[in-house]
Length: 163
Image (cartoon, rainbow, N blue to C red; front, side):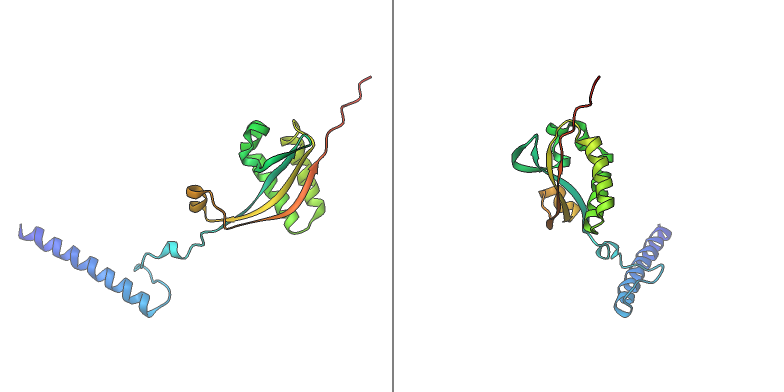
């Protein structure tokens, strides 16, 4: 029993010494020193995400009452709205539009429109840059900021000529 108490006191003293060294080390130095950590990892990680989305403004020539983000437009575009490929295409369009690279934006737009908007045309849409805290967006659906960087029109496709 005495050995058990001595072991418990030893571990308690080691935990207290670790805590004192970690806190005192933080006061003396601005960074941590191994193996003593003050456990401030997540206070150093920025908690902001910046991405792009396509906001649908009009479909089949009819303006929507409320514009809808592409990822929330499952009733209009079906499974394409949840497609990872669509999301990656939207990111490419947004990045190219943000840096004003018209050639890259046109190439990404052509691919995106052909693959994900082929059922509904004409479609008028905006490319929107969003900044948000992921937890706040998940809990409250709020963004820190949104900014429209470009507006495009996916034109109606011409029917193929048949002999």
